[in-house]
Length: 458
Ligand SMILES: *Cc1c(COP(=O)(O)O)cnc(C)c1O
Image (cartoon, rainbow, N blue to C red):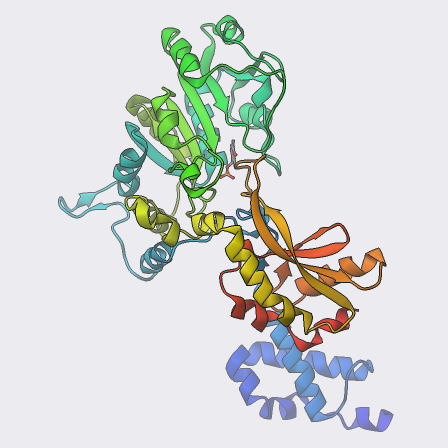
């Protein structure tokens, strides 16, 4: 061994044979990897021949070249999975974003007059047409939309919110915290389960900046409950001269019951109910890129646009392009479900998913022999991202159950699938790993991601 180490090739010798690696990864990184391979050989952790050293360098370079943000298979059954990037964009939106990245665009340029234009102009017309609102603007995400609206209408004043609607969306988005950061004093009214008209009415004073209604998007309060209907709240707000803001969260532009899903309030309905300002997300049910829409009364939108914070929260040309293309798809409702991946996934019939699972079952089983059993089971998918929290959608899954009842095996199985070059993410239920196939559009991509080494997990 010592003899071999004394005859280790030099960095320069190895680099002379590393043409392909240099071509792929560049001279600098290849040199670093060759040095690391030599160090590993000296430490007895890898082979000392030229071939072994170059192979070690190649595998280091491969690992390093793997992007941190990379594709996964979302087989969790949650269609809009926040941690997996929520909505997948339509081909039309991807193409529009591509063009905006490659070429100069009319971002803030009025072609007719040759003078400066407005970013918001690209979406305003579409948003007004699709929602019935008077005016609209767009910011980084819905959290930013809520922050900006609160700060614009309520700075140094009070915002009235029902105790049943003081939501936490996850992460650190809690309504009371956002309020205080927006410089708005929170006035809670009613109780967790019941808030009445008289509660709101008694809280309105000359210090009130706005009334905030929040769609309880990730939970439902059921049982002995009362909330003030939006149109009544809008009437009260108008009588007392206070703006009513409705944070819809997901906010769908279409009636989802048409696609066999539970009904979520549409943005158009919220506008018709009389809210002065409405906020909703771009990458939840709408199916576009991350964004937050603010729509409503013209003079209030103007006030919001004058807030210097707006500049800090604005969206870039790439997302504007994708948003415009996504919104355009809504002008052709007949083809919407075919073109918008989010809606397409949500609307897939359980029978079609089950047939797909039956097709894939023996193929996946063949990777494992008798160390585990793959079966097809019915399951329930979720919309995710806080939309329709209590209604699930019938679906079908591949269930992978280890032959041994050792509970750690299923965890190890899940980890093995997560460690694939393209990770496959499912969910563990009842001692089995479930792959809900609702979001799997093509079988071959999944099969190609499975490696013959999979059984080594056990
Ligand atoms: C999701 C949600 C938000 C935050 O929206 P993002 O687009 O994730 O920033 C705010 N309010 C409600 C009610 C939500 O459901």
